[in-house]
Image (cartoon, rainbow, N blue to C red; front, side):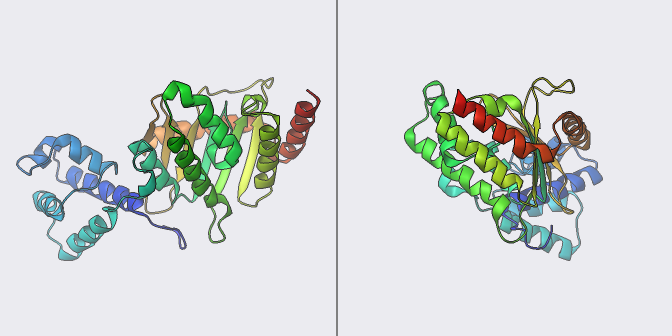
Length: 292
């Protein structure tokens, strides 16, 4: 993990899960064999190995390590310490309103070194203004039965996530590709959109942020769903995240899946306008929406 990154419980949980999965594979054990008689299920261990949940007790960890034949006391002590650090819940003030998989993604995102994202129909959350984010949730309020409290907390969480781009120490590198439709679809009203165009333009001027726009009329590769590829540094594997319809996210660190979406991103990048043309395009959109 790079110097200066905040290593939170989610990242620790993923790190521990990766190591437990490696040890189980080295011991040539199935999930069923690993948990037999230990007081928790195959499903629980699988979720521990993917970083979705922490092990509830340090005793469970020691039992697993004994079953895997781990005897080195220093190794055991380091994993017990990792378990201790992975147990607390990040973003606790949002726990009742945010889907658990979203909380996991936010935790992973917070320690990313670099993020590559494609958003075809809405402005990427990390680039959204507070007014735009509020309007997005308000659009979904009736269909998803959102409460005002849910919207307020969700917008606040989005603002906290956005600080990754502007923090003074070690800001994340973001390369975002937006579909033209994401910018032309009016969310809220004209004033909201004008503010949003200005915000995207301002963020794109940061050294650590690159924004490209994929024109609707451009002939080239398209991907229907949005996705994010996260580079998590040297100690954690790169991860891909894809939204799913029921308010959750699907995440994978399998090299095949990460590679597949990385290739998709590169194809989208090749089809999109060069980054240096983004400011002019946003100014054009501002003039068009003012004249409408």
